[in-house]
Length: 355
Ligand SMILES: Cc1cc2nc3c(=O)[nH]c(=O)nc-3n(C[C@H](O)[C@H](O)[C@H](O)COP(=O)(O)OP(=O)(O)OC[C@H]3O[C@@H](n4cnc5c(N)ncnc54)[C@H](O)[C@@H]3O)c2cc1C
Image (cartoon, rainbow, N blue to C red):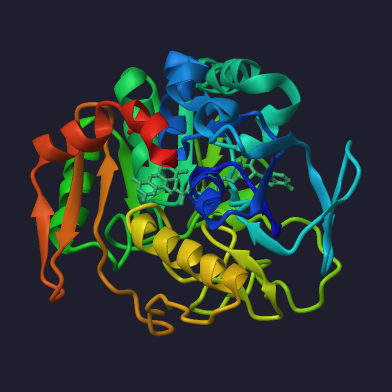
């Protein structure tokens, strides 16, 4: 019986493991945490401090026949995975879905040490003690966090600095960018747009002037988080796993990768159904020894195409857009974004996300 090892218990690794069971192979899922974490919900953790609203036990969402190992992967080579506390695990096929590293207050790697409850208290304390909270980076994460802090701490000074003249980026239509700007201004967030922040330690400067700040939140984007590996050519200069449009590592077709850890230019969960169906189909073909592989469309380099997404602006605000198949974009009404995302940040869907 073939042995497929999946590393990472996030929305990609967990779901791939569940779906691969149909291949008849033995499936082992290795994750450094017992919990599957819902990243979009993490922005509200510092306020409600309730782990059950951001995570679920992996054993509760995985099919019972999947072998679950909780451990840190310390090395991956061509045929086996070395673990911190267990014996090495050999594989016939490997799927890497170890996500990305984010900064506080959504730094999942940090909760491994003390648990989510402790991490929640720690990040909550940082915000509660501060009077001047400054966020650097006005992409989706910066907008969402600024919205949360402004909503929950209306008396504190919240500043969001973004290098572009409009919030978000070129993948958003102007109507959405303008809407998040006016909603944040409505929550009294101070916006510094079209300026690059200079960060020196915990101090922030714009045009040489110091911005009052006693809690700095960097929202300048995550970094890919591949496991340490002795395989040559597995990652690029950004540390992303280099995959082909079949979700196979370019350097070794026995290794697959999906999600935030790869160099695939699109991120997030919006297209996950398509990506998951391609990777599970290809693994199935691979295990059977047939080669009717499917491929994912690879966006052209340097072209920031418009994509479907929604951002929250506090629990009662938000904006988003929907892209029709022929490329036409329309903005989503605020109430629809609040209902679909901002009010619960998807946590009510956490269990069904891994099927
Ligand atoms: C605030 C926020 C809001 C977001 N909102 C949206 C949204 O509205 N829509 C959307 O589509 N996307 C959104 N995203 C992005 C989306 O959450 C991510 O793209 C998605 O979670 C990536 O899933 P993943 O499985 O690749 O990685 P992750 O969810 O990061 O999972 C990685 C897993 O790997 C494990 N792991 C890591 N390293 C090791 C190791 N060495 N050994 C063993 N296990 C390891 C971790 O414990 C974890 O289980 C948002 C992200 C954030 C932060």
